[in-house]
Image 1 (tube, helix red, strand yellow):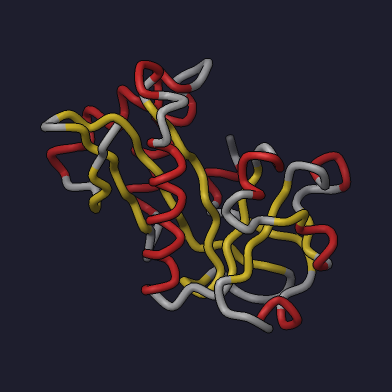
Image 2: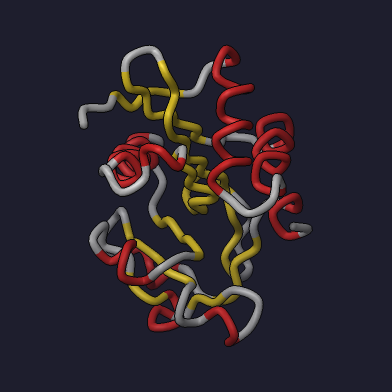
Length: 170
């Protein structure tokens, strides 16, 4: 299926809320996206469209790693949502690929995510713990992943990742 990935606009907000609500078991992610849209600085928010319909959404927000402050150099991918009718058709993959490209174009050096290792490995994500980066203790080590966008920069980032406070409160 052909989809077009583009930046989210205010006209997309209601549909993005609906997609996040349908893609997850609760409306927590939908409410989270609404809040991050208002509070998170330097976020990258993309939608996938098929025809005139928005069918997917991905959000990247600045994170801090260890002693560094949250900045556009270190981004967290969360959440990624695709309308259930369009899952398993490559929409999520296109959102991730083009989202990573948008992060690189915005001078991001590192992206982290909490997700399925097999899925995110195809985009170059590896276990963050192998790079000395963690998230809320060892329970998440097998699902917390990292991707270096600028070769050699991971040596400058060590420690625990902190997302925007709204994500941390989820």
